[in-house]
Amino acid sequence: MNLEELEILLVEDNPTDAELTMRALKRKNLANRLVWVKDGEEALDFIYARGKFADRNSEDLPRLILLDLRMPKVDGLEVLKEIKANEMTRKIPVVVLTSSQEDQDVVESYKLGVNSYVSKPVEFDDFLEAVSTMGLYWMLINKPP
Image 1 (tube, rainbow, N blue to C red):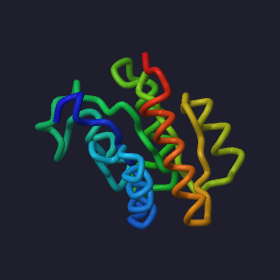
Image 2: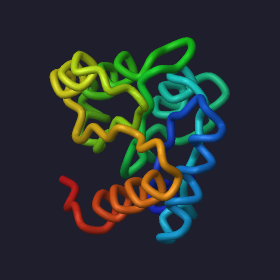
Image 3: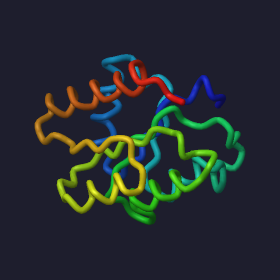
């Protein structure tokens, strides 16, 4: 996969939430070049081209990372910390997309350098609208460095 092909890395352990996110992005034609990984360890392996992603070109980075916080193996805050501490990946916009409403998670996410923090709406239509709007902003409106 080259840089022009990979747009969004979705890091989400819940298959239902992942499916809803992909559906919302598809409605706005933003899911054609999306990769879904199911935990933080897999996300870091993908980003840094190691493990089962060792054959991937590590220079082909996603334009946007949608990151859940509560995941097995490596949680979202640890993934965020590693991404933002690395010169190669720190400029990738990271949006925390989580069901956590904890103030501590919001504060810690911003301390670690998150670009945006979005709580997943409970209602189906609200969820689709929030993800679609967020996708449009980060992929089409926002000007990356």
